[in-house]
Length: 91
Image 1 (spheres, rainbow, N blue to C red):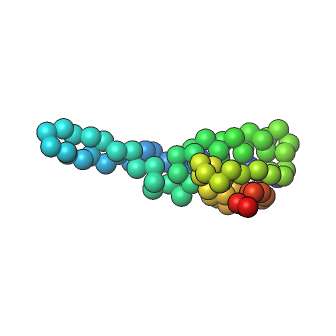
Image 2 (cartoon, one colour):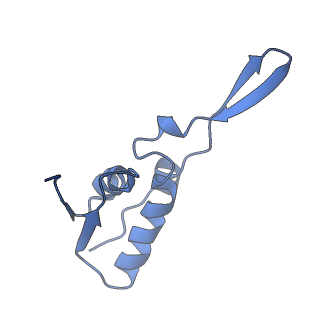
């Protein structure tokens, strides 16, 4: 398995949106613009570290919440890695 990353694509600069509310100015980090959300910034380098260590298969037992599965799927697709996810369905 080869390393595939384009660091800029997987962890691009943070987009800040300026918003005025009443007399205050707030800045919103638009991590929603990343396909895998903010967790994508961490999971892609982690996957590449695992590939460097010789791992070739990734299996993730996913909870129903947290959206790590979205970050993992988006990053794996961009890196061209195969990931299997398992999630317990509600009873």
